[in-house]
Amino acid sequence: MTTLETRTEALRAQLVELYGLHCIPAWGTPRDPAAKTYGGKAAKFAAALGTPYMPWQRYVSDVALEVDPYTGLLRYDQVLLMVPRQSGKTTLELAVMAWRACGWSRQNILYTAQTRNAAREKWEEDHVPALESAPSIAKRIRRVVYTNGREAIKWHNRSRWGITSNTETAGHGPTLDMGVIDEAFSQEDSRTENAMQPAMVTRPQPQLWVVSTAGTEKSVYLNDKREAARRMVEEAFETGRPARIAVFDWTAEGIVDADGVVSYDRTDRRVWRMVMPALGHTITEERIQSRLETLLAEGKGAEFDRAYLNVTRTEVVRVDPNVPSAEWPDLLDEDSKRGPEIALAVDITPDRRWACIAVYSVRDDGLEHVEVIDHREGTNWVPARLRQLKARYNPVAIAVDAKGPAGALLLELEDDKAGGIARPDDPAKPRRGDLAVPTVQEVAAACAAFTDACRPPRPAPDDADQADDADERADVDEGQDVDETGVGTIRHIGQTPLNVAVANAISRPLGDAYAWGRRVSSGDISPLVAVTLARWAYRSRLPLVAAAYDPLANVW
Image 1 (cartoon, rainbow, N blue to C red):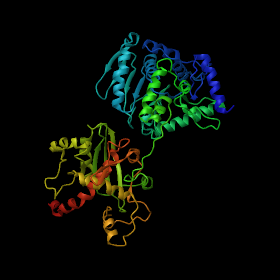
Image 2 (cartoon, rainbow, N blue to C red):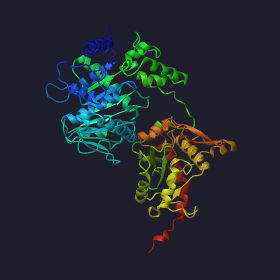
Image 3 (cartoon, rainbow, N blue to C red):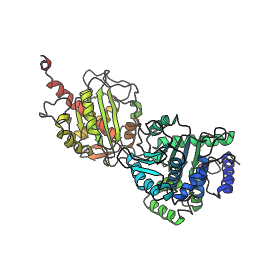
Image 4 (cartoon, rainbow, N blue to C red):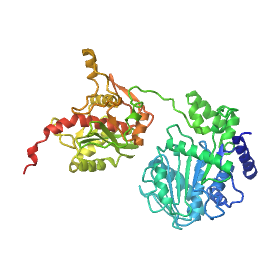
């Protein structure tokens, strides 16, 4: 019997005996029968909320809330919970957070999801109504604050249950006792956890819950945490020493053949029973069969595996020759700094959930620097931030694509006369910081020129025909050093939003040319669009701004 079989069979025997649970996690932390637990108390809150624990939820709650017999404190400061969709993770989270808020005084609890808006929706439509509909819990609530940015359930014992964004500022504040990162597959990186952890350091019993169904190979934060957690489970079994993280991972990735290769049949109901702990409780096999048939008919078998078998989906990569994704890693320069002159640009996603402001500059060595200055949820913050950046850096221009989602900002920017951001009165004599609004043709040219700048310079032409072709490539500024390293002239500093945007990007036809396709790309590409437009604004406006400069204007 392999180590994997030994580990899972030992866990199976325990869970069947303690909970009557036959659907066991492929990677799971066992219950320590000698340790006390607050799991029973959380179970009472689940019952009060009208959602009594299923066996798998009681198991997770008992283990996650175990007490270290030596310290008398919670044994685990992190919990990773991975279950298929519709398994009941939300009701488990709700019960544990309610117990935490009521069981101990002055607890600060924060919940976050894919975006702050998603967290607000979950909090307002699920959390608050469920708590208020349970009389024994509702009487402990002092008041609910719905003010945007200050949302919180405030309790008579001075506990607070609020929401936060999935950004670097998530959880920033005096202290944090419990953090819940829901739908963790949507996290681009570890910024949310990194923001929460420092606020937990001084608390005696902090606990961070990371809860999710599997994502895709782009879910870097979740995939890394999942891989590390699995190693910890295996090491704990081999050494007999518990880790500081409690792990519960129900997935078909634990079903392997004789050679240890993951092998499962998504149509086999026996596989479902091995992976879906809520099957037979809140989910029926007929409903799963219906979803399977629908997704297979749509050619989305991998999505069934992700959502219902909790298997990380591997993307079928579409190679777009217009996107410099292959060249991008070679253009990394973590020490890159912008030059003395800059241009700014802003772009917004089609659903207006995210906005990005980026900068372009030519460095002192002649290479081209691109950087994301700000990338945040929503759009309301953009005008004020642009005015702040204009006042601070006096840019050559600020680019906005009037035909794109950011076009709606033009009216607001131009109506604010005091802000000083508007289109030039005389296009031939623009001022610094004026708006640069590209035509459709200029957007296409900007995208092609950006890609060209990411690629190695082509050899010198041998004849006139080749010379005509070479003219299509973006020229290097006069006096710029020739890069002989075999890579393009663009340099970036490895920012995750920009890296992800390049990886997500797909071009769309624009006449005989192309532009970045916001709607056809596989995710948010606003950082790529913004740096592309910033480059165009710099190169098209710098000569005009320089020509309009009058050295006598500053002579008193």
